[in-house]
Length: 167
Image (cartoon, rainbow, N blue to C red; front, side, top):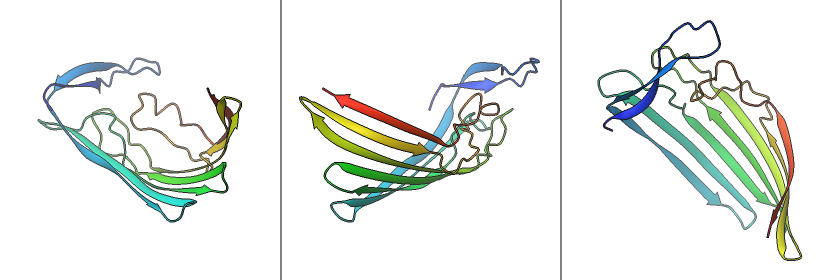
């Protein structure tokens, strides 16, 4: 890719938590892909394998900053009745150690999530009641592509209850 624009960390000590970046333009080579393989075992049960990988290098040497780590996972979906659905998802994010100047290594982590949803109709509107649990393993996870990943973790174990109305 010609004239790719990226934020290069200058590595300056500002005596604060802020990083100093300079937006630069250079030729780069980006490669990668994502894949998803889904199999419907029955009307009520399906499984999906998924993954993604990306690499970014400057054409004249060096890695691009904040390139996400490789990810591989599995998702199971179950329909329990006409209106109740469940989902279980597990994925692994690998360690990212292909670094640009002044970047730090990001440890790999495992994520586990689950959810239930109930679909219905109320007068002229469709609704969904849902319960979603994320990071059930309470992993200390950092997103390598974030500028503040060294200071701020991704959310820990959490539960969301919600209602969606479509009219």
